[in-house]
Amino acid sequence: MLATPLILIALLVLLWGVHATSTWPEGGSIGWAVLGVALLSLIPVLLFFLDGMAGRHGVLEWRGLKLSFASAPGPAAGAMVPANVTAPGTPVIDSSMQSVLRTSQAAARSRLLVVDLADGQAWWESRLLMLCSVAATRNEHAAVVLVADLGGRPSSFVGWAAPAALRDRLLLMRPELRAAYQSAAADSVRVMTGTPPGVPFPVPQESVPPMPPAEVDLARHIGRIEAQHTQPLGAGAVRDLFAPDLVTRCIDRSAPFEQWIRDALTAEEEFVAITDAGRYAGLMTWRQVANSMLLSLIPQMPGPGQAG
Image (cartoon, rainbow, N blue to C red; front, side, top):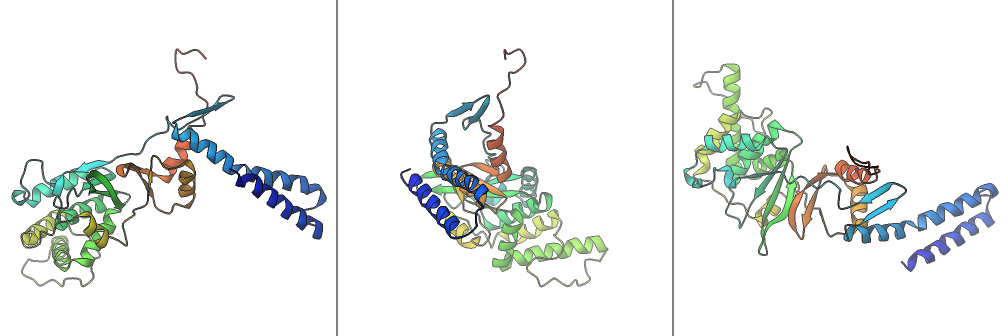
């Protein structure tokens, strides 16, 4: 706060020096320039004031306008996917891939999917591939949120990514999963083209075939290899495996208001993760963040039957 008047003085001195040694700004514009510098210098004061309000869930009201942090819409938490996309109460080793497929299809109806890695034994790479493959083909704007038990805190935020990005990374880094995926894609093409099963069919060499396989074919081929490839996924493994694709940036609810503004102006990702003391609270698009700030400025109109 002390730096604000010092910055103002420095800017005014600089502006006056430029005006004295050149024709800019013109004489009629010097007043507006000084006013602009003064207004800019008040931004830190405004941010400090709003930050204090946000921390106290306060409300600022002036001539019918309200800025309320407490009433702003909250983030969407998303749909929690059962561990290893297995029906609760069913042992993972006894769950069929057809059941996994049905659970994945049901989960993929949600745009936001939450995968809880728990202590590192709750999910296998093959099951995550199945879930992400289904979600990627059904909703290109979906997001998979990864949480885990970290430091004794359950549901701690690890990161989020598009399901297609997680699927492609698994296919790139795990040859056995890539082979199953490609075989499933080949079977799907055979069905579409009417190629008899006994006729050899070239398997694409790329990590991801041009056409995604049918979901039933993928479930069958993943189930065929899963007994030999049950690699579990923990938080550390996820960070290492998906590092190029995983978005780990988040904003905690206790963060200063200035950080919210700064992150909103510099964001490049589609979503921002909201945490509460490190625990995952939900995802918001940056448009939702901006809209919630703007909506809070709308005058509070009396409802039906309420006095004005």
